[in-house]
Image (cartoon, rainbow, N blue to C red):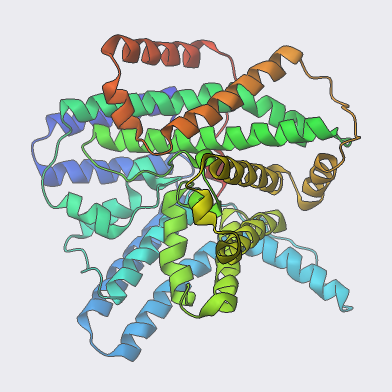
Length: 473
């Protein structure tokens, strides 16, 4: 059930109506939980069992951890919980990848493994709800959070449908307190929620799918080596596509939750205005980057053990973060490049005084240009169908003499270039602002005109009906 579908509009209308008409707060939470499971069952009903298993196991694990003071027992329960969660994730998401990688290694040392004979269907959203249940148990183990008093509240935290498939990755300490007191969306919340939903659908259906995706598809789907300009243009188009696609999803999720009176944290803060790679990861997929920081980077030692260990911790975190995105070496390469850039940035802090650069106009421009171009460069591994194809596009990007081979419409290219330029200008303007504050200062005729234009363009501009990119993760 996609956010950009009529079925979801009908589903949301029913859920919203029940929420407004039901007085009992407990009953409203029951409706939301049932609706969330129905939403998930729309993809493939047996997946409900995979959602229930970690929900039940981590509910009991957290209560046992909180009830005992014996450290070995607490560690054993936490370890069992993590093994179950990571085991399910490894089997359903990484079984084929691990088997194929192991086969290559076995062949290299002289063995002939049996051909792979299993085909595992990836449960939608498993990477997201697995990280949510793990963070809950870990927080209880650290004594940073008390176990949820109500199983209904905890089950709703895991399965709440606006964020179930592609985040934001919620923390129990953020969500569970909202379950304790009755809430109903105010008129202002409904208005802003509908605005976010409209903006998100426009970003996804019009900008990402109808305008940017065809160029990226043409370049990365080419059967021959593309020209240098084409490789850069296709990669830039994908950089815009994935932002508008994923930020569009996050806007829809936050807006949908707000219609029901629930608050979600921001997941994007204009990342293409970043001045450095640390700044980029404070702005891109914030719920994931903060999760990796708090539950992987810091436990590994973070910045506390000197520059060499810090670099190892950064690389380990980003390599695993890349692998989280997909069971392929191309995602490992993508994460590794970001880890390398973060490591080099940290090493350069004391040599070139990057903080000083951020205080001057020329320095900020230089930092922005380097960050944006290198982030764009890494998108080749994210978008290409495989590692070899990514290397082919990179070879074209680094070959200025390679001429164009694709016959692409000049008008379409001009539209894409204008959209990408507008995106960068918008990100620069919004770097230290929030969408809600800027929107609130607009005159109502301008707001109305913008919303009407987005709705009309979403309904009238033809485009492929595509799933959100992050559904595959």
